[in-house]
Image (tube, rainbow, N blue to C red; front, side):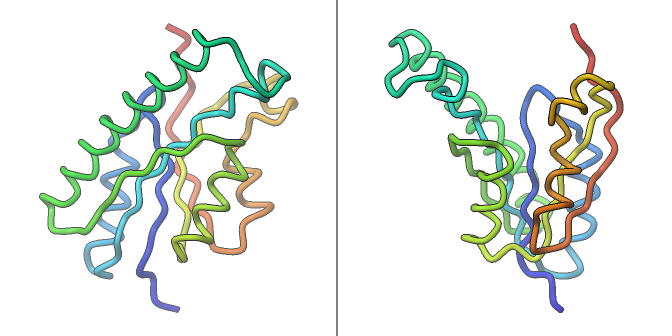
Length: 151
């Protein structure tokens, strides 16, 4: 199976250049395109109703804009290295959003960075890499990026 599309999940708060460098080294000899994706958590999940307060929606829009600009910088640096790349930010449930985009883009592989969230976060489902491994129909590469710094 040829790898032509790699979906890289990345965000500014947990950004790890090593993940991007690794995917770049993987994609270059394969002439694969890198899709850099960030899924902004759906605000309705947190507030529990259809129309959230305006200030929360405004904050979400600002976060999406910031994340997209950040991911576009990553995509630009990847393109400067000779690999096709595009940045995408979507709103939704994180695992579902990643899997839906992977299917839509016909991704041959999903790559995500995985931090050590600790026992409680893992127990309550915060392990994105593990969920992707369980549910993805394409190979998933989980790249260790170390513990999340609470500061």
